[in-house]
Length: 270
Image (cartoon, rainbow, N blue to C red; front, top):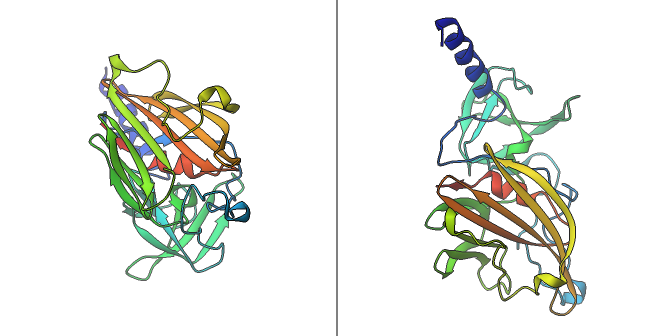
């Protein structure tokens, strides 16, 4: 590679890293870009039908879409804060995953992006991309080889070797089931927890290709019926690194929401 070619590649990488969020490439950490079924405006808490159906996803409502309001950074590599609502504006600082924000206003740009205005600690107005935030509180949870920012109140518990579930304290159902192991020992089909109906009864809604960092993955979305006739959705995602596989099984109230993409975007795997 000539010095000129090297300089051009360095410039490309520098510009890419100055984008909306941090573009930090680490072989053991993979950012996620997902487009999932469902309306992003869907509330995370669905009213139970006559109190018969469990609220599967979260036990705290999203923040109302008013200003000022709270939000939380979920992107695993943090988010860049800029002087204006544009990815080309001057970067003022970087906020880490889990940072709580006070959103003062928002702006929608012609390119379809939404930016939030916040105040920095020194009082300056600044902007960050809304795609890297949640409007429900999150906290860090982990297994032996996974770290992920879950809705407040959810924590992992190990149920078998290489298998864990993220459950709200006292909740009858888990939000997320994770199974991991050596890549060369990955099962053909992900294991299904005993709490869910047999896969033969699942109705496939959609299958979408996605990237986990630079690795391909597939999000299979199924409609299922829980005990008592309660409808729910399952998102089934397999992520494979150079040495390990991860099978994610998300259980959500119908209809689906953007929570699956947000949770996976916050994840760090070995």
